[in-house]
Image 1 (spheres, rainbow over the protein chains, first blue to last red):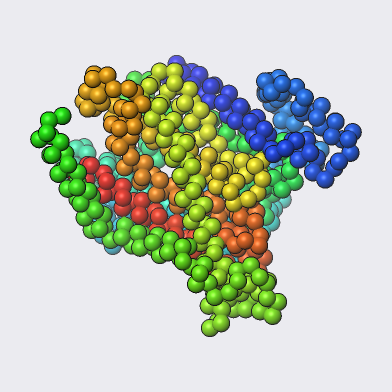
Image 2: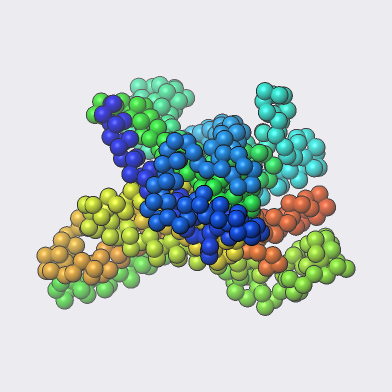
Length: 315
Length: 291
């Protein structure tokens, strides 16, 4: 098992190196002189020279890359041009907010997606199955920022049931925190719930065709026991790993959700950085997201082996 | 190949095509999806000529008018007719979806073909680069690219195309690995045909159906991505309309003018649903296991 994990980590290393090259290459896409773009309206030659030296823009590109990655490896992702705060500190201050949103959205997605997938598979070909499929496909097709706008319009503006925007840390007021986060979590979790529902349905249908399910039924076991104890346990194996992989999608979806509900998280940080031309922050966020995603991928691989006894023995 | 085999092949191909078509037409949801997509494509092509008003010119006498006989979809915060803007916006949204997927296919498929066909270090290098690109979530990558390239519809299309490219590299590579083990590829190699010719003439046509299915489904994702980028202000720039940028403005007038959000959002939802239904239908019709 340890050897398997070691092998997966080894494979992840070249991927991480290429990710760093991609993120570094982003700043080379800036049209014209990058210093002029970074400086915005500032045209003081001293400031321009300072920026040029700071980002080593007169050095050859490989030197620039190694200097940048060397700093990144020590946790120095640069300083935000607009706030003068180290990028890593900015990211670490925003990350807990996005993680809370992502975890709540994942709970919503699992709570809706898995039961809906099971019911749809068990009732295959019936009106329930068709309805569940139509709802799932609609969930996949609805832009989550529009769903957010519609929910704010109905729930917050018309019915005044929940706050439309803002964020209160759970340490300050847990109840208000839940009230502000429930709608964004629902918006973010909907697309994921649809995806999970479709995967659960197809995994359940696959498992329910197996011989051991037929045997369990032939033994006269209760239908509920066959579905929950025998079928679901095995169908959940790919779902567990899928949920880990969907975490990347959650982070991307959080960008828009945080924008609509004005939640000061990771996603809002990158959008604000884009408009403030704070390129070090944009690069830092992209790098951290990619590293996080590779880590989740690794976790998914390990989990897949851990929850699947056949693979566990061969690993 | 003998003459009989050639004739048999020529007869079998239209038969296979008609079987796929009849299977597709039997799938009601796929036909509905196709009809929705067709409707929006027509709206994008001829809609601008039918648009009752100028989509850009403000009219300060008709600011935020609700839907009426004069303005079917109401007007926006500058008094512009929403229906006319929606028709012009359809062009931007559909073009963004199609062009970005075209970019992704044109760049991704050759890399996938090369990786799958040659294997070895070429495959390893392309696959690791693909993994790296897939490690950055689609929208975050598109936002970062659009940020560095500068906000415009063209750059948004390039950004979405580049972000979607790894999906096609990975899909094509996987398909090539299956096809290259087939006897006809071995035969083509045995008679000394050049690698490029084998890839273009023998492998590519056989990996095309799943690419088309994925392409259709990715257009749906790309339309949402364009709408998202325009919503964030990184796509179509004002005053030119796109459904995403219309929603960006509409969010400031949720209470006073709900129609400003309802119509563009419904349009995005419907066209994405259409492409998803069409893609699912194509996948079922082209899936050899179902035939």
